[in-house]
Length: 274
Ligand SMILES: Nc1ncnc2c1ncn2[C@@H]1O[C@H](COP(=O)(O)OP(=O)(O)OP(=O)(O)O)[C@@H](O)[C@H]1O
Ligand SMILES: [Mg+2]
Image (cartoon, rainbow, N blue to C red; front, side, top):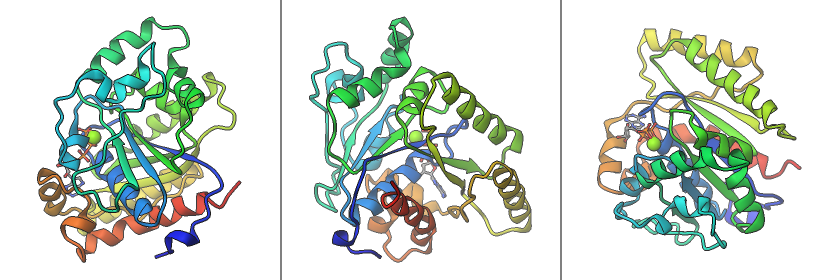
């Protein structure tokens, strides 16, 4: 593992975790990537734009919050840069991994946004006007690809796509097309870089191996790397239900901890690219 001092950060990365299927491990992937990068010394902020509030549970935090204590604050017309940043209860690596919680209040944001001029750019403008000093910002948005997803797309420098091991590949294909098409409509320059697809809850049976090959083929055709994926383990659910989501904390030494490393390393590489 690279030492904290070894990671020379030359730019800020905004990583959007996007999927068009719910419950497949978006938040789990985001937490583990952020946790590992924070362990390596990178200041990481996980901004949850999702309405389900699972990040609070994963972090052992209270989810019953006023709007200005959540990511909704960033969308407030009178936002003045007072980011509602919290630390997970686990607190280790101390201060390096921080969160802005989402939750059902994000529903009101999603309802209000369409009435606003330049709605897709609201988040981008907030981050530009009140820059965050974090090295890595991770964005988690609802699987419904609603207006909140557009705000994430508009600000992302990188994209990672968790992929369920049980959907038709057409679903993944249409997600990738949606991202590219909407990115062009928003005139993004540069377009965010696809870090890759991450098959989630991978089992070791023959069916899954065949499905993995299909996924890899579709992604490769589109010049998108396909990571080996994250295995299925009931310990992920145990860890998140106990408010200690990173498996590295809850079950250090569990084999699934290693599954995140290829994505962690690919992300780390991006800090060296200009
Ligand atoms: N590899 C895995 N193996 C087994 N369970 C997992 C795995 N990854 C995530 N889980 C569990 O699956 C559930 C859903 O995961 P998670 O909340 O990360 O998905 P999500 O895509 O963010 O869901 P949502 O669409 O509701 O936001 C959680 O209980 C989590 O602990
Ligand atoms: Mg989630």
